[in-house]
Length: 399
Image 1 (tube, one colour):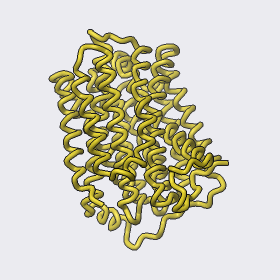
Image 2: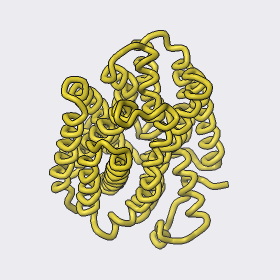
Image 3: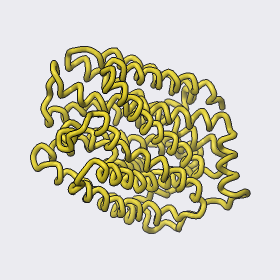
């Protein structure tokens, strides 16, 4: 039985080719996959949802990504009370409860109800996400933290690819309702996985705070390096959401004019990210966090001009570069937060995730307005500004 909580000694880093470590990384990644598979899978059926509810792309994009508001809120709350929450119980309940709003989305009568259910999904997903990150930060050695977080973010990347493929295929073949029923079942599978993988671990209790949770939170926000990392997370998801939400509408319009199933297959562009993100911990350890994030952001930036091209191959290449770059930068920034927060890592992770998901919400609102009012070129320009801001904030990530 593989336990997520198996501690690693100083000599056992992710570079050790141990079957046990490889299996543990697989379990960490699979847990991440089943935690956030609902978050971006719905983007693959955005055009169909837009027609179903009879609204604008910006309105539907905001409703679908309203889950990021719930995730930002839950990340703050869970981070604040993290020292008093049993990790195993919290993750297990969050994933089990996530199945409820996911299944109800199948019968959402209007956009307001759909939006409310997406926010509720976000609350459950973020609770599991934040507790798992805190759990890994507490259980892994300092040398292994980056590798463990990279495995978790890799599962996140895989959920973007596989979730979108499943969503497009099910919606195209069986209809929108069955799409949500299937993902509700996957949420329950995640709860079962957590139940069995950490069943025999003693309940985790964070080290008692020397001050109140509020004082600990303020202490993190007074740390310039952590504040910069929080800002980087905000900018990364803003750029990612802006790209992969509204590119869907570009892909289904002339001259590309893809069908729903073809739109799902497009998201094989995330396949390279599944491989590369897993290496983020090692690269950051060798080169340092700042060069790693700068290189990743530069790669994402190189993809932006390609997104504006009229040929599918060029657009797909741009999507690959943006996906690889943003996920790699996210993994490096997440690992930095786990290392830079000397104590109260649950609160630090919660603050980072709150900023990260808030960036997704702002990206949806602002870039959606740009897309509706001025078109795809203006939206891509906004994405470029977000990446540039992240690069500037990276200067503050000193050791």
